[in-house]
Every structure is written in structure tokens, then in C-alpha cells.
Length: 303
Image 1 (spheres, one colour):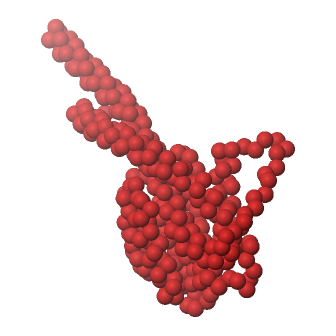
Image 2: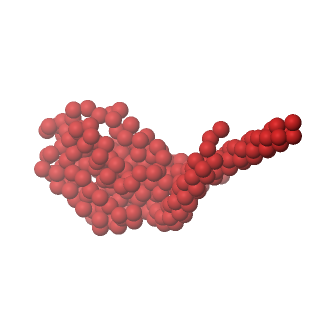
Image 3: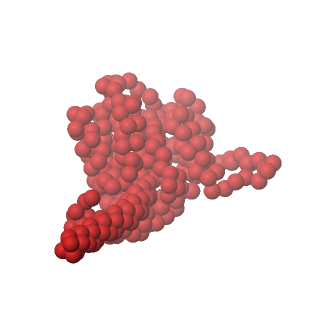
């Protein structure tokens, strides 16, 4: 039977850990609400931008596709991969699942741009080519994310790579975050189809169409011409897409951390119960042994 003092010391240690994880759960819960509100508030705007860009792209002929962001090219065969991870740990398997997907698609043509300390440390440990690393606050602003997207656009214009894709955790709900790959440059029918599909999936999670109801097609009139307007819109499209993915990643991070800390707190409470039961059993055994020793001594002296 374990020593009573050791069990008491362990119970105290687990209770202290439980208090820490409970405090971290409350902090993560507050940050989670803000991050979720920011991510959900941007979705309708980003979805409409995807629709508008897709309609502009559909209304120009192949001969009018002259913007560099629209043209596929093969200059050096490099692909820049933006990896959005958390700055801190203690958020369950969130980063592990995402980085596993990143490594499944890894090859010699990939160069990496990391946003978040966990992704940078993982890729540096594997000696991957890290083109740049960025750190963002818990509540990043659009202007802060534009620093990253401007860097990407500049390097793309300098032909440092031929395409760009983003790996991030798409926020579904508090208990579900999905590792997602999103191709962002060059912008083409495939990229816009992915953007529209994600937007429609997100809208479908909140809105269920009535039975038999069909969605009416949307038509736009463009002024100036579609190709001119599209050329002006494309850099902003890149800025907003990256910002949206960063907000989704932050909402996923805080949600996963809140769930992980709640699970840790519950496990600590259960462990305290188990240790308390073990302590009571050990204490009862010690008392029984003392009674037996006293009885044996009394019986011996009475003989």
C-alpha cells in the first residue's frame, strides 16, 4: 500500500494542476467567443467576394486573362505553402493533424511560409526550406494580415515560386476543426470553385433550404468592364482570403484549447477522486494494523 504522505502530496499536486487548467479553460473560453464571432462575421462578406470574383472570371474570355495572378506558369516549379498554426500549445491534436496533412503533400518543390511558432518549429526541425516566418496576435487585424499577403504577392511577382497554397484549420464548431488545403495563387476556375464550395458548405451548415425550393441564379452588371474590374479586385481578393483563413485558424485554436483544458480539468478531478479513495483505503488499513497490534500486545500481556 502506498505511503499516506506520498498520496496526500500527489492529491495536492493534482488539485493545483486542476486549478491551473480550469483558469486556462476560462481564458480560452473568452478568447474563443471573440475569435468565433470575428470568423463568423467575415464569412458572408468573403462568400460574396468569392461569388463576385467567380462571376467576373466567368465573364471574361481566355484572351483577356492577362493579369499575372490569373496565369499559370512554370518558371522554377516551386510552390509556396502557407502553414497557419498556433503560437502556443495545449490545444489538443489541432496542430498535429494539420502538420500531418502538410507532410503528406511535401516534396522537393515546396517552400514554406509559416504563421505561428508551432509550424515554424516543426518545419525547422525537419530542415525544410522556410521562406519567411510571421507572428500574429490572438486577435489579428486586416492590416496585420496584409503584411503577409503583400509579401506573398511581391515574391510571386519576383517569380520566387509559381503557385501558393494555404493549410489551415477550418472552424466548423467548438468541437470540430477540419485541416483544410486551399489553393490561392494562381487564381483560376479551380481556386474559385473551391472558394465557392467552401462558402456554400458553410452557409449550408447554418441554413437549411426548404423542401422543393431552388436557389435563383445571381446576375451582375459590371462597370467598368469585367476584365478591368477583375484586375483591380484580384489583389484585394488575396488579402481577404488570407485574412479569412487566419481568423478561421484562430477560432479553431481557441476552441480546441478550451476543449483540451476542459478535458484536462475533468481528468484531474477524476484523478483526485481516485487518489482520495486510495488514501482512505490506505488509512483504514493502517488503522486496522494498529488495532491488531494493540490487541495482540494486550493478549500477550494477559497471558
